Length: 257
Image 1 (cartoon, one colour):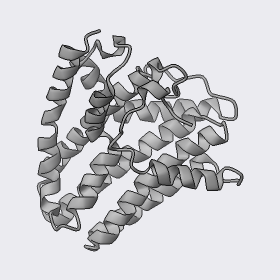
Image 2 (tube, helix red, strand yellow):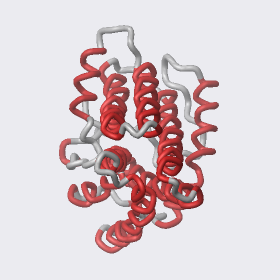
Image 3 (cartoon, helix red, strand yellow):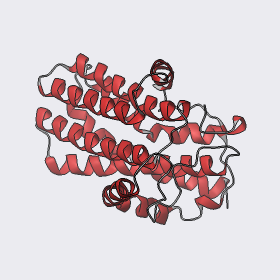
């Protein structure tokens, strides 16, 4: 099941884990495993990758980083197969992602003897990049006929719990989500406040934007680690943020609201 209508589908460079995620979800659809279990599993894979980085096992780290991306695609797929979408899963997934991103960069900083100030800046940049991708992608999904609307363009209030989930859990996770992501959402919305008025984005543009998707960011890390370029990862993601201005300029110039 797709998050987008057929005419809005694009080559998502960050979604290379989808085939594995779909396969895994299909294996689990008739079991007692829930999407939350899968979310916990991708968190475990990320932690194993971090352990491998600390012990200079970079090929293994790359494997578990890519495995994390594949498993990350499975929780949403399983929710759609079981027809059990939930805000609990949506927010838990995002909270796990930002925690793992922070630990990834701090670990890379520690192992490569980099500046922690630069590591914090790189973390900020990675989250800002991912927020831009999610902003445009969620706009496209919400405007797509039959598209997935579990994610909202503006996360300004706790949503009503869906059948099968607890409202208090949704409220707590929403609060955590807004605390850890709120500043990035506000910055991107400020930089491109009219983007939500655009009905659709061309497929080629969304493919370009997908270089900022979490999966693609992790792919870059997974490539640089075994190549012995660990000390370049932090400065790379700082420099990589320059494309934010390029993408927003293209959006404002070519696809006006």
